[in-house]
Amino acid sequence: MNVNLVQLSLALSRCVDMSNDDFINHHLRTAYFSEKIGEYLGLPDTDMIELVVAAMLHDIGVLSQDDLTAIIDQNETKIHGHARRGAALLGIYEPFRDVAQIILHHHTNAEDLFQQGLNQRLGLLSNILFLADSLERKISNKITLNNVLDYKDDFIRYVSGRVGRYYLPDVAGAFIHCAQSEVFWFEAMMTCANRKSKYTNVSPWICSLEDDRGIVELFSNLIDLRSHFTATHSAGVACTSRGLAELIGLGYEACEAINLAANLHDLGKLSVPLALINKPGKLTDSEFNTIKLHPFYTQKVLSSIQGMEEVAIWAGTHHERLDGSGYPFGLRGEAIPIQSRIIAVSDIFVAMSERRPYREPLDKPRAMQELTHAARNGQIDPVISGLLLDNYDAFSFTLNMNTYRAHKRLSQAMEDCGPPQLWAAYGG
Image (cartoon, rainbow, N blue to C red; front, side):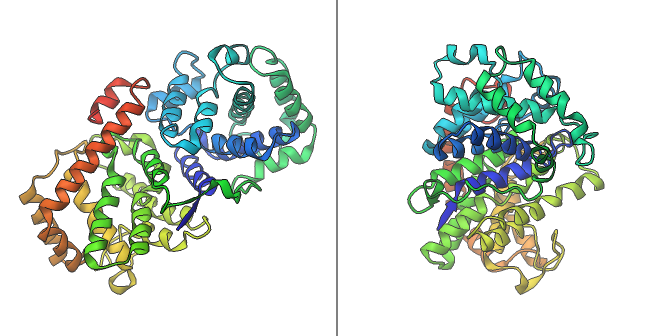
């Protein structure tokens, strides 16, 4: 099974852009600005792909409210933290090494850019992203398609006044040329809902999962790291789901596909505000209604990726229950695919093993009791849950080993990126 890395990056950026009112369409519009500037400069397709992907993922290292505040306030002493974390996460995986460097420097001023050992190519791409990111943040809620041209000259003056210290002359000049076009601004305001790019179907960025599972781990990490309570949750659900799929007798390709779906099952949680993800107390009914959106977003966003239509269904229905009490689609019985049922059981099992803001991990007797109760009440598949219960110790061992390896890998990658108290909580 193949995965288009550019389309998957776009899927993540769409979800992140829904997480906060201050960031609606931010990544998508930043990618649009970056693409237009890069094209005017005549950059080769290889550079354009890296630039667009970096723009789609540039704030993926935002892991706390402090990070959000630093960006909104443009706090120059704190704003680089999320860039370092995003670069560290993406840099684990070889095809994203240059993308990681672009993200690392997307808040670096032009006058400081090449003092940090960056080559001319990556420096140029970083500065394009810096300008595009800064420009997009100037587009407030009061600016709409109807009145955007009223602000065009203000944007041009803003960039012109920052040439040299902040923006490279060639980058600023490219923007100023593009900005003369009225269509440039109209497309900027309209392009976000169905953002597409001619760079989304290039073969070097289409990855075979059979050849490289690192990409799945990477995107699983990007989804889970917004809370230290779920730092390796999706990876745990994936290894448990794969084990159950093998026990049931699903073939190799089916097991690979369910592994992918399980790793991405919480993609939609990127759209949930950080404060809600990390709330220490019980959720209100209204807050829980917001949480209920996440599997819906997961399915909608993944279904936009070519070849992942079935994976999108399995991932997006992992909170459905056989008795119809699940969410968000209210499916029941045979309407819920076997793959979704496997992920549902695995999700419950892994969640019970994890610490939460409101409770400690459940011990084995309590966890087994909860699973048995859910199966007897007709909520989860009794055959699948029975297989897990019959092999509980083996699944627990595999889960613990998987969690340990993931913690170690992430801690090594993030050692210098902090915040320290956050990574200590990850078990590093």
